Image (cartoon, rainbow over all chains, first blue to last red; front, side, top):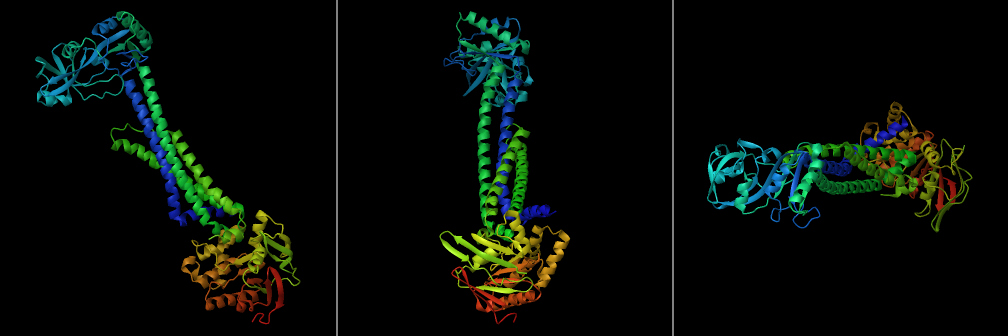
Length: 394
Length: 230
């Protein structure tokens, strides 16, 4: 009963000194809120990236120019300029066991009127392999056909996207028929989709004057086959290139791990920022607690003169600090979670945030600890003073 | 029975020294004495009060308060002794600023573990005794100096201490308010409260039945006052 009443004085202390209470709590709220928000956004970005890579299909295999050791032209996003891959390589790969579909992919920039327009030169199977979404018409099946990006129809054939099919387009004195309109592509990650207008591989090679393609995309018959099919593709193309390892074969798994590495670094970076905000919040709490206890040393002296034991004084300050930390922490979590939900809705480029219990608990725990330690430590020091010392303080 | 028996009690600060090295042949008696402690500033009267009030620890000597040896008490026992045996009235009131008069008076009883209903009743009675029943809900900021000091007196009395210690209780008050506090002390004294008032004001000192003079950290004289009780 006595203990309860003394503990209640802690609560009372918070209420009557509401301005100080609010200020202290603000530090905790900002610290916890920032940690929750930043880590949740980071999680969201990571999940979104892995999701997009998985969406490409687990049995996608990409052959790109350049050796994996990196000779300048390599890497998953290697340019076609120094490519040694040819449409013949693609045809050879298509005959390998376990391969479902194969398509070359070659980028070409062609002048149309005053504009430079980039096209992807691909085989008909590309539509299936990369899940190209058409809003109208069909995909490129023959030479002399073109699929335009929705955004390009107005500029190239002077019609809205829904009326573009059937129009003709002149590229370098050749007539192309518009056979389809591609939806605005979300290239996601993985092998780049330079533009979402398409022509056939043959036309693209003719327009660019090249004989090599930028990449070859392969769909394995099943995800379980990917390893074996990759080995066969490597052997086949190496043989066609007279043993030269001037290309790399990349599977989704490898891509995924590359991106996981990137997002892991992003996550660490965000956690760093979150840690700093927690630290700043903690220092804010610490400061205000130290100042407030210094201010209240006289009050501690009065209480001791009236018969409070050191334990009584500590109990009161401990309860104050715990209440502050819990309440501030809870508000911080609420703010962080609300921000995680709202922010991706306002900034639509952000993927939805993913709030995890562990990170919320960590943020909450650390701030609560800081609040309690710095609420109680200075109070403990003041409580140990002789009352006459404490009463002398102004 | 003697309330205060302090023998060879000393307090040493750093290199300097303030002490009360004399044993008191005629200690204050429970139930009636009013002792004034006088002396110039720096003479050690506040030190004496802090030692007798258990707010500070003596460097040496023994101190028996209300029949209990309190010179060796520590921690919780010391707090309990302050709570049960002593009531303080300070020059600057030392009320908790954000608590009502009622709340301030209840505080010593909270630490004594008095239950809510009885605590409230006793606090009201104590405020009534000092003539502030109608100010119970006011915060110290809403009270005059004299009223604040009355609240402090009510708070000092509420646990029925063996000794009421007042350090310059009229020091911050105008003459009329000071007089009314001294009248209140007289009333309380007549009702059996033992009082020790530290002051450098002769007029205040002479209201007591006994005046102890401190000089250079020692008890210099100890005599009956002619103005006893009058």
